[in-house]
Amino acid sequence: MKSFWVQIANQLHRQRPVHHRPFDELAILELRGAILRCLKMLSKWSGKPGTDPQPVKWMELDTSSDALLDGETRVVSWVWFLEDGMHVICVVEDTIVQVWNLVSQQRVASFYAGGTLQRACKYVDSKKLLVAGSVSIVDADFNSKDVFKVWEYQWDNSSDVRAMVEMTIPVEATFTFITGEFAGLVYTDSPEFVDRPSWQPGYSDDLNILVLDLQRPSIVLNCFTPLSIFDQSHTQNLRKNLFRMVRSPDHIHLHFGETLDFLLYTYSLETITTLLTQQTRPHNHDNPRILLPPTCKTSFQLSDDQSQELPNGLWTSLGDSCLWDGRRVGFLSGIYRTVGEERQHVLTLSALSIEKVGTPPLQDKLSMTERTVPYSRSLVYVRPQEYDAGHTPDGYWLMSQPNWAKSAIWTLAPSGNRLQVEYLVVGRFPDVPLDGAMEKAASVDESEDKEVSASPFSRGDSVVINITKWIEAGQRVYDLDLDDCQGRVGLGLANGRALILEFV
Image (cartoon, rainbow, N blue to C red):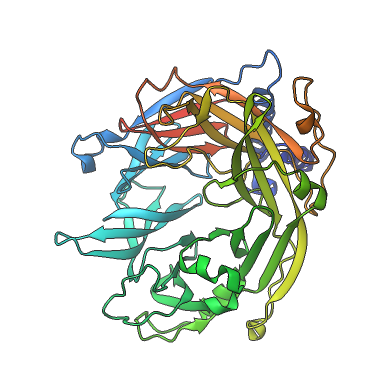
């Protein structure tokens, strides 16, 4: 009986995510519920005439009730859904971290980060929540330092959040990652932008990877990759932190994005774990550093017909990369263009396959395989008329990454006032073949211009949702997150509240 429901879930997963966990691990009732929710969301955001895409329920989480805030109202700068489908993290002014239960609408835990949370990651299972992050701390004399921290909260009791790790690092982390067994961070310490601490007077000009054993927090693996190993054309980008990283279940991927082509370097988590288990000495700054080059270098090239037909203009990279469907790294870019007298907003998803990336034996860790593979893009066209893409108060595009999702969410605001969010746009990307070979472009209605209809790109659809009913005029939105499995959208507001919209 269960195999029948697993087969249905696998078929639906091509169209939209069904559940964050593997289907074989779910009880039959849980799997059936996830399938039903998926079918409802397929209809909800189908864009078909007569289908109402509006949320069916909404809630506001009042973060100002936290004793850590002394009753003050401060902006909700992060909204972060957990993969368990029951909880959300709200970060207030990048300093106070709150965990909320979405079923009871109650705050279950909160803690002070000790400074400004810069980069963070999370891990959740049935027993605990782990949060790791790079924190910038400024003392009373305006001296600053960067610290890497890990916190733990157990679900089965109401105990306080436990600080597991606190370690000073030379600079702010560029990337953080965590599993149930270890946590880590990546940083570069180039003379381009770093003030050296007194205990480390020289510049290494390396990409540094620190990994901590959460069962033995004093044990730290200190790895490095000389920047000279990377292509010379990207060395300067590495020194200036102009690169992106994302973690898949078995690897960490570092990549550079160009207008057409991408270059991705892969690190093996199996190799890192093996090296970590071999560490026995407590961490100090005299511990030997271990050379750790990438195991694989992949060049992704766009097919000739797509590269020739990609809409012309200045493409803008939108946020960090993400793990799109577990098998591909997803990277969003956007552009405005004019067709006739009509202005269009075009969003493109580049899907970079990370399958068949091997892990060499540990004794061969200096070897790096190289490969060239095709990749594809899918496009979503939006005609915003008198609207522009909404922005956060600090100037970033207000949107969510399609992490384990077939959709991305972004916002629209009136032209000339990009902070006044009025609409949500749901961009739904079609499935893209892993080998980069594109299927025939999706059909478009007769109102589409011929240039779009003749495009070799797989074309996604979009649904525009008016949210002025829930966001009052003048209210600023600081963050946006999407849980595509549960059909939820979260917005962090300037009034100290997190707005949660539920669509099923």
